Image 1 (cartoon, rainbow, N blue to C red):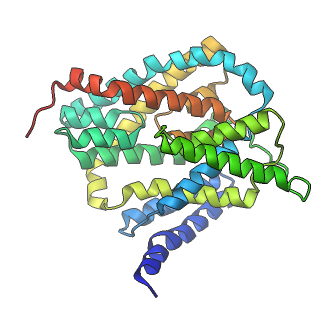
Image 2 (cartoon, rainbow, N blue to C red):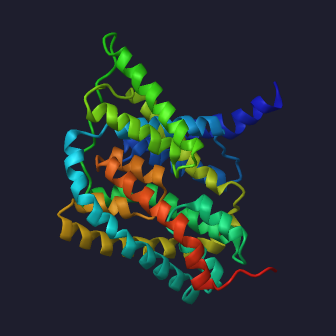
Image 3 (cartoon, rainbow, N blue to C red):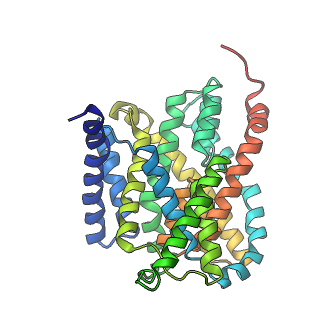
Length: 351
């Protein structure tokens, strides 16, 4: 058997099987977002135990396109009416992001005794690939930043659905979309072609979360106008949830249990501080705007665009709203982080 095939089986197929078992267990326990959370927990343990977990880029892109299409199917004419309240909640990001960065940086410096560079870059909410690129050009501890950031995302995806549900802030799980029939097969084909084309186009333009955002926009237009009524088949959605769990768990590739143990308290502490700040700002914005608190919390949660928008879909919390807020935050961070780093850390120096 060719080495490439063995590598695929060892790093993707085997973790996929483990993730499916984890998702099945979570589903049997009746936990929210079960297939994604269960797969994430199971394969994260696998990665930390020394097994390599990797999702081939073409498969990852296909999954992001799939979930963009799924999230867009939740858009209705009522969504367009509710967009009138979005500018106020988006303005809240201008308070939220600096507050999260300041709170986590202060905690990591004063309590965990990390240097200022490492604490600052470990505090940035989301946009991990961009943050890591800047971290490499700084004097920060790159490994510590990666572990703290990744662990925060794992905790968010694994814990947030349950916490929102326990607090009574979760939505009602969305019913499956109508299955495609011989009469609607053309609709499904149109949905797949346009969503994939738009998603890949956004990806080529380097739009943050391009595959997901582009597919979601195309699907939203098709469903919002009534041109398409069918959705993605539920078994395909379940497979997608499992692979999303693998994609997040793969962030821990190469991280040893010793490294994680050294940074565990810092990672959990940063997560708690970030969530606390998010709750304060989100609840204030929800009170001002009248928006559902759970939806605003998810839109403000310090995670990635794809993961948070997918959670919004699973929990029926307006994925278009959540995805739009995370996209705005990502763009804001991309534009302002170099200036913020210069102000907080001073001019970059060699050595």
